[in-house]
Image (cartoon, rainbow, N blue to C red; front, top):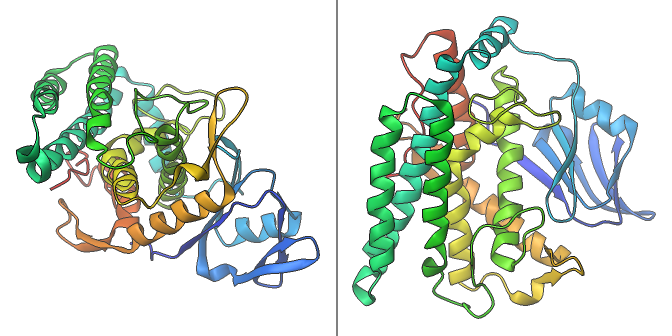
Length: 343
């Protein structure tokens, strides 16, 4: 199991990252804002127009530290990688299954089942905590619908139909998501999922956190020797980490959606931290990104008992645990891939 180290998030557009010996430097102008040993990092994520020296890129490749660049809103731009490593036999097995419709379907069903199951858990937990205070009949209906979708996923024999089931479940889930927001509703209304760009603060928060989760999933898959670009549920597209997106599906409700709701309902985020651009897209200020990243890092340090492994691990290691289980199934060590299911 990979040790949970730190991810360095560089959010200032004026920053430049460089190498000094075995240290990563964050520079703004001539001033060194941060110096951190490379062995303390598992990844570096840059937002905005941050630059990086070739020497720093080389150091990250040598030490297997993920280095990725994103726009201010969190849209993925590029990732620095070195030579392909890992078990070539494992990757060849991954490619063969990805090219086989029936083989891909079995993996895709696991990812979709986990996503719908965990989305239902988010709604059920809300009803358990707040259901007696008001009439949430639409959330109850949402839970029933997601339960039916789970049964259909189990019996599904066509990947196109499976994608349709996932889309219907997502629309139902996001259709009642606004009801889960109890505080600051005047500023954090949610009228459905919007991306590229997010059109309101809640979507901006979700998109930013999904970006952080995507980085962790990509790093996890590379760690166990899998190719993040070749997925089973998401179609291949140049520059698209399809397998990372596959793995993310089951983790979104637990790792991102619950954290987003908690930050909004506990008033950890303020509308002043969001900027609406002329295009209508909403982005976060630098200070708000720092606030969200701090909460994300704290969340990753909390421990849970993994539902399949039965071991206590930091929440931040869930993507690595699932990537490991995925690789074990591909190697034939497990009869099936066990998606992460909330308790």
